[in-house]
Length: 262
Image (cartoon, rainbow, N blue to C red; front, side, top):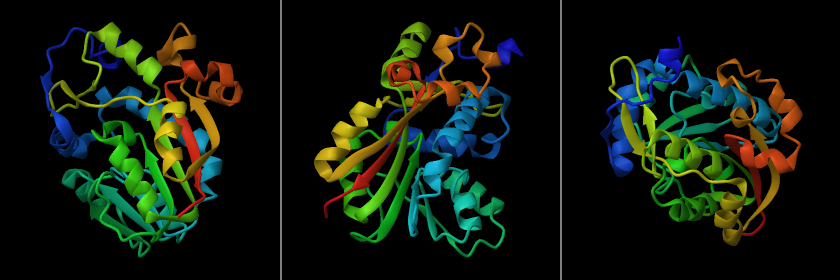
């Protein structure tokens, strides 16, 4: 099991560059994204993230756009509640997988696109959800502008990112470039793609000049603070998340923002 958990140590990677590299990687991962043994840490981080933003999700008003929806981790749940949701993703493979998972969700609308060029008209959305996707965007400033463009005043935006501090420590330890992260599945070889972490403060610096106000910040997955991270008890996030001095050590930062100007 240890070999599967830490497969990214001392392996030979191929590098897929830029936005097209991200798209190709997720296309190749799509069929095994939900069950690959090599995505163990992805699953753990997703579980932690889901717990810390659960309450925020209940605050979202439709129509909602889920930027980087993947195979529908959140979009399907939102649509099941009858909330009009647009699932936006750059990967055709992930969109195809989402469509196969759909039942009769009339409220769910899969769209191929990316957060830097959202194919929606100005001011047509009440809520934006962008989970573990913002870091993949080569031009986060353009994404911030797009989020502001499509979101109505008083609309909410939830963004989760990999903390730049902990991500850089991992990249240094693994000897991989500062703008890359590793992925692998049973069918896809070890691959590096673009990902640059953002702390909650860095997200605020990008969004606040564009009409947003940060109204909530939480952290999760404090893997740096325990000796055996593979045994990480996810409930520990409930204890550590409110402690702002420990935010530096959280793998994931979750940010809730309100758009207050048009």
